[in-house]
Length: 184
Image (cartoon, rainbow, N blue to C red; front, side, top):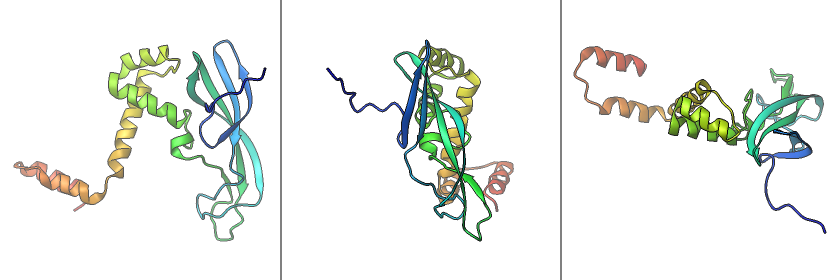
């Protein structure tokens, strides 16, 4: 009797699992992108030629009490645009799936961020270790700090100036520091 798996996703969206290797405490998933091609990050053209491939490893959410590592096959492409300054580029997967240079998937990074916000450094690190997502307390705090800075940068400049001008400032030293920070 054949059993079919439900709609569970072993790998994040945009990836297809080529091979799975189960160890005693780890699961290794060899994955590749489902997209046929990529676009150049500089000029936006779709290349016709693949230059090479390389392996990249990233941690993902645990499965059945085992840590999961994705071994991602990343393709490099030649950019054929004449005026493009980038000749070779690697395919990108999006910051919410697997950010460039990241060692964790976007969904694991979100869990780590929420653990850091809710519990702080050392307690969150101990809890994450029990959840089979070992991270250090410094990493938890670094993720929280980075995400806070990103959300601050995403706000529009007009709302930041409104925030600066809405507070009553009586000290002239603080007033000049705020105006210097606003770029006046």
